[in-house]
Amino acid sequence: MTNAQQFETFMRNHQNMVFSTAMRLLARQSDAEDVTQETFLRAYERFDQLRDSPTVSGWLKTVATNLSLNHLTRYRSRWSFFSELLGRGREENEEYEMEFPAGESVNETVDQADRRALVERALQKLPAAQRVPLVLFHFEDLAYEEIAAKLGVSLGKVKTDIFRGREALRQQLRLRLADEPVAAATNA
Amino acid sequence: MNTEYEKQLEAAVRRELKSLGELEAPPEIAQRVLRVIEQRAMTPWYRREWQSWPLAFQGASLVGLLAAFSGLYLGGARLAHFAALTPAAREVSGWFSLVDAVWNAANVLANALGLAFRSLGPAVIIGTIVMLLICYAMCVGLGTVYWRLAYAPLKERQS
Image 1 (tube, rainbow over the protein chains, first blue to last red):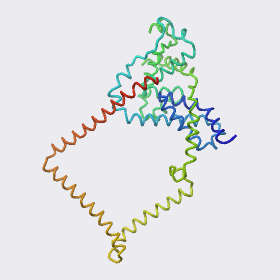
Image 2: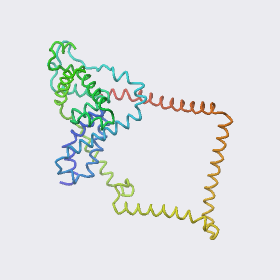
Image 3: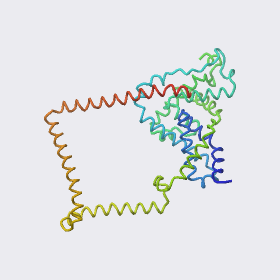
Image 4: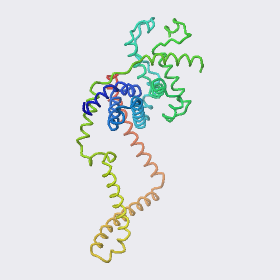
């Protein structure tokens, strides 16, 4: 097998993981594709060390995460002022168009694949300020302090944003908490 | 915020997110990457970014640059001394006199601006600057609105 073929196999083995990492942070397919491409180009430069490394997944994930955060930083610094001016109200108060059959629990009415698609969509619709720390916490398993350091924001802001993100997901997906009665969750 | 509620919320969201598998990457991604790698491989070394040059050429270019700047600095310092001695040096000195003329013109322009500032008064100047800034902000604002209007439907189609 030639080097190019080996690298292609390597990419096929890891591309879903890299793409998922970028997509969940960026919430935009074209950007996630760009980050995935850049991650693999960097991997190619050190393919000799990476191909047999047991930590290759972690390396790819870290690079994809950092490139995604860099992308968000660049994008935000360019557009944040006017985006916030024009779109803040829409972002924070937007009602997501998710249609659930009235009066029935979501868990009972949609199958697993649809359910996952709904969750992905709800996650992507969160404002970046909530989605990014939430993804870093739940998917990258970073602690609050690490997230604050990575994003360059205060610990309090990270906690608040994650709480708001979870709360938004709970409302959109009608999640039932442990001691919440079924009827209350359904009617929420 | 209620701590117990937060814990339950965290657990519920964690359960939900952990149930998600990996997203499927577009199948053409691998081909895209291989195409870029191929293009890069075909690019001669001197047209690539400096970091990817062969080590020997990186070293040589560093030494060359260092020598060039040192030469320029030392040469410039000695030029004035030898300017009167050789015709060639006199010619090079002539080039520098051109730079000197440009410098003088810039000085005159700066002085004229200073004079205008003093005679027009700070209010007029500040007003003009503010107006220019407002015009610039309007340009950026209109560009942003246009971008958002053009981009929003595309984003909706993608989502």
